[in-house]
Image 1: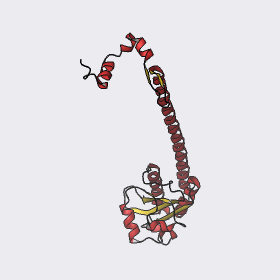
Image 2 (image 1 turned 60 degrees about the horizontal axis):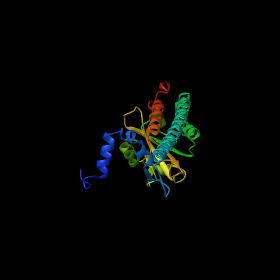
Image 3 (image 1 turned 90 degrees about the vertical axis):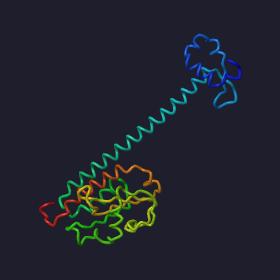
Length: 226
């Protein structure tokens, strides 16, 4: 092998294929020096490996802390959803469910800007929750396959909130699941990062499913069915 043919890749391939090289040449390993990753000095190969392992360990510890924080946050959200659902199930008067959805959501999830509009529910024909429902609102709801999350882009539904939000979530409500929407649930926040386009929507979809199921009690004119 000529000197010209001896490349860094050749050396790397040789060491990979001969893992016992440094064991057979311990003096070479002990005397090798490499640049320090953060300082202008040379360190032994062994010390460099220790630094690499420490860096990886810190990265794994950070990732583990993030996973634990996420798990704790998800557990709290699950508990809040359970309590919210239990409160809706315990509501004896079906006509109070729309107001209950807004009130209990605000309590459980620390939201101050929530609006709800409904249609095609016979027992809510003359309710305040049936007001301001335009053809464009219904068309918008029909097009929503999952919750909308992000900044207010002059959405008509955002006008139902008391003030303009920095970010909002708009949830289509269906009863039963898979049917045409019977309403929109709008949640606004002053925090621009509370609802973002890239956030996961699993919990919001669950909220929409549970709210839609509860509102199903209002889909009939027969009070006994509720």
